[in-house]
Image (cartoon, rainbow, N blue to C red; front, top):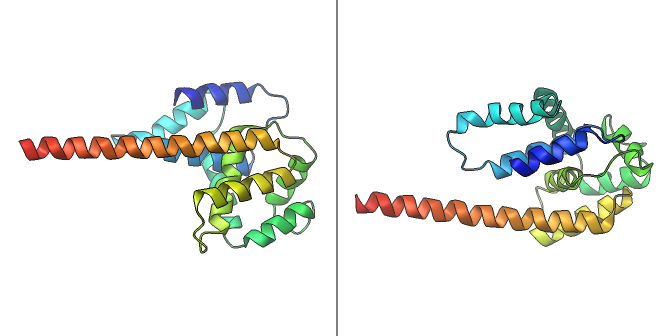
Length: 186
């Protein structure tokens, strides 16, 4: 959470930074993933509100944008998404159309949350074709390149994100096993 707070603070001061749908998907995704197992669960919403609010972001608006973008994209295929990007968004529904155009013009400040948002959206459009982590990373990097995002940074950010997810899942499993062992001893 500390890293997320620092990142949001730094982003809030960037001239070309926008809290559009893909960013919102990335932010809500990373928050959900890294608060898995957080107890008490009822504190997750207020924690998200506090983190966003402390950096001048409207948490409810970001959740709404993320939900809208996810609902919009899940009706379509990966091929359609790629087509929209290569055609500069002309076929895409709003707000995706505007986002694609701004990204391709370089009017967005890059953040790892954009890469994570793209990855999550690709996972959504491709959810019927269960892809593995490597395929998801490769497709995300390909789409990010088409959008004009820095290839090396996207690749590095995704590798770190997926490695951290794996570490977190291992830690959660270890905690569960430890708690179960303690219960069995009692």
